[in-house]
Amino acid sequence: MTAVGPARPPSRVSTDRLVLRRFTRDDGAGLHAYLSRPEAVRFEPYDVQTRAQCDELATARAQDPSFWAVCRGSDGALVGNLYLHHDEPRGWHGYSLGYVFHPDEWHQGYATEACRALLDVCFRQWGAHRVSARCDPRNEASWRLLERLGLRREGHVRQAASFRTDDAGRPVWHDAYLYAVLDTEWDPEG
Image 1 (cartoon, rainbow, N blue to C red):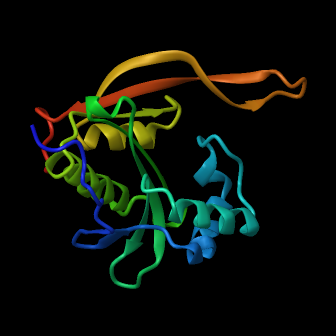
Image 2 (cartoon, rainbow, N blue to C red; image 1 turned 90 degrees about the horizontal axis):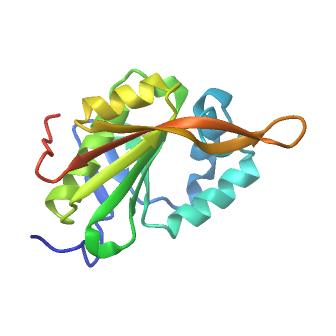
């Protein structure tokens, strides 16, 4: 078995078209460009974000090694972000994956390319045993992405989360699909 994880995670991962890098405090404008769009955050646990909120998020994400800025290699534009968190207990070598991309960049293959590159680092360099992801069943684009990446649907969890409340303040529950891939199943070609 390889190591639990890198002593120092890489600060950059490059693909043919993208650069995955750590966030900086200066990424607020780039985050705001897509987190201010309702369609981008429709299935997220937060609403559209103001510029000030995005500046705060950029500062927080710059300190959090779970977040990755996804930038076009040609011009450096921030097109989305990935979340790859080392779960507890750490000795189980499990990670959780998440992503949000700018709606103007959808259908370009960026999410597939970025996730595949980071998952490959996670399995080959960090010694991951299992990577899992959850998504709202109504978010077909998300679960289709997970399937393109080679993750298998392991479950349909009923009323698993509530990110919103109704007019009376009661939780509005939604289901979740659970996806995962094991180190023995990982294929960087998908």
